[in-house]
Length: 327
Image 1 (tube, rainbow, N blue to C red):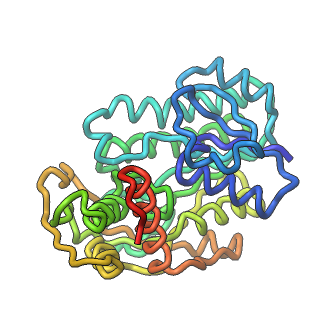
Image 2: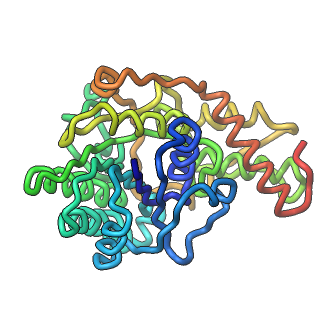
């Protein structure tokens, strides 16, 4: 079996590649990269995978890639995934996420291939829900509250349209908050962890700068998420959509409290108005029963373990940057 992972150099893509290599060693793993893609997350497995340069915005490059690789499965994880950045670059976000997905699916059609394709949408498509709508089901209305959410709504619907119109075997997920080692610094929990690690190392002073701490969500580990994604293409039917998310509800402030409790020194925090979004989604609790019934998947890694690993990852990054050995 040949698998193609777009976004293989990101947090989720690299963990998915790790998972496949460890648990399905007979699978041939291919990854889509751009010439400027950072490779640090896949350095340890680079000799075990095959990397290809292509661009989601360039249909011809995708057609050439697919004809060369002829994958049996595609995990489409590449995206502009930073909500805050999407307010500064809305057109770029929509072009990358929506048009990029359309190009990928059209390339599959043009190449005459028949892979199963995981399309990674987002819980952000639901926007701000009411308490009566919690837990959020897959049938909940879309109310995208950011350009990123709009782009993921488009991606979600393009995937459905290509299934309905052309029989392309797309299966969509709407993943709720997930994190772990290799998380980008711009996300709340990793931004907290980075600042804590820098304070511990003496390269910055208190306080940690934070945004909205009242947003409520569930948290899952990225390593549980990629296991779910593999099960998705093993056991789920094309054309379907599934919520996936953690089983523990907490506010962003609770995440910060856990990280502060793991710190080796006293940590203070202050709200930075620059970190508050023009519009925010503050209630994200999923109903994941449809996916669990289809696959048997359950969250296995506790939130405390996940956040400890996020903090240790940031300690290692800071240590490499400033030459300080993490404590």
